[in-house]
Image (cartoon, rainbow, N blue to C red; front, side, top):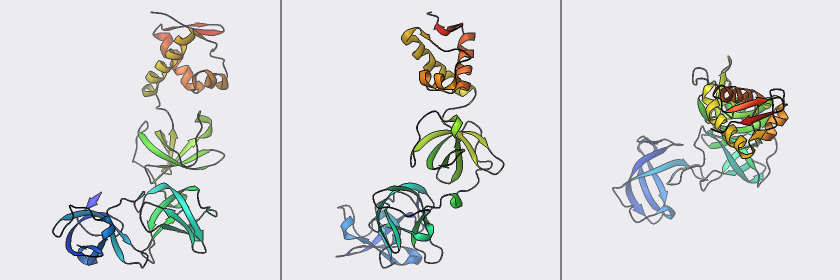
Length: 281
């Protein structure tokens, strides 16, 4: 989002008021004149032109402008790459010349250069500097009254427990995929399309990888039929194990029963003691 007001940590549209060897100076209102380095020069830039920039602090903690867009804006959570580590903490590439520091106090465990971590970008209240945090849970907020069951969302996986996979929903809400409802491989840092199954009383979201209810049955029924048409039959019945159903169809037993019920009523399949048979129209 681009705003007209000049604030650190945001994108805004500012006017060029001076041109110097070091670059262009922008009118940033209460923040004064802010440098856009000459390394970001393009032919259309000159005095009097408005330019869209992101404002942050340089290595001397002075406000500076860039036309680059951070990989994650302050307040957002994203998968970033650790580039270095020292006595201050770990440093991350977030798309700007000055790297993002994750202090030791904000690390859940020591961070290793070259690896990817789910990090929240934020502004330190005391110093005003941009920092990152790996302590994701403390930064997630309640999703109460935000979603309806069945709503589609984007979920970033950031942890695993005995219950299932922890996820950041739309960059700020707390979500969980229960392990017994996940029938595909999920990995740390992966972003997936998910569906809200339930908003719990504590504001946390129960998530699924497929739509629920009637919305789910139609596309899954089509998937079922396509698989069935390959051989004309499937060695599955109502008593088949979840593992056998997952092997042949890649779906849960609950979904399997819903699909079979729908297709049987539509007279597209026949149910036999040891198999399901496709009825050719």
